[in-house]
Length: 268
Image (cartoon, rainbow, N blue to C red; front, side, top):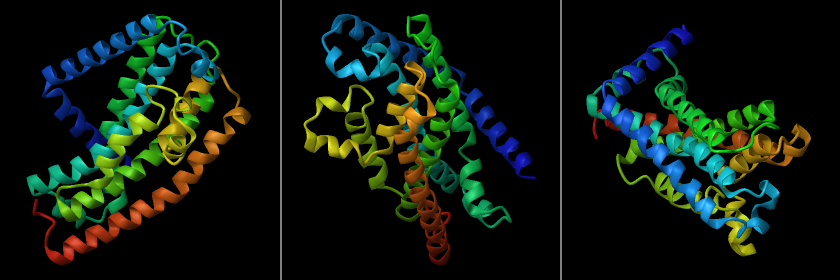
């Protein structure tokens, strides 16, 4: 039954995406444009940042490619759950969905399935173009990368569910989305190593899940680290997942109860 529901949610997302083919093509174009921009920036930089990039293989283009590719999961997580809630509210279908026998946690997960599938497609494009442009992934630890990816999705989805809870109750002005969107790319090691920061700023990086996600993914894909070598990043992501997922589901359930009691499910 759950798989059947997942199929229909995915099909709905696919049909909506394909109904805007020009938007789809534009996204692909600007993604390729973005990759090429950083490719030529890396060419210009040469070995200027080698001292900071040495722990990641020494190549800036490889470093930033992995960061851009997998940070997309955070952006999708922060947007997809809250946008799904907002869209259902605007269409007047949220109340009907939440009074069905399907668990609330299942509804919010299924409603964003297509977004994560499309994000994974984008990641594959990033990696494929990177390989074409010379990124060496011949030593990649695929198993370790998949484990980090699963934990990344759990962590980021938990944050996205918290974001959706604010949208559910307050309609606008989600502080989680605004705070993390603004800080993760800067402090999470997406575009440059966190080692360039002074120690007191690095402490901000260490409380962001994205730091451990992109760090572990780089070591797994570019340097072929073993699971033992990836353990610090994996264990940290496990701790984030164990803390954030139950908390986010609890808060979302409380948010649903609150808006039901106030009769605000269909208001936006």
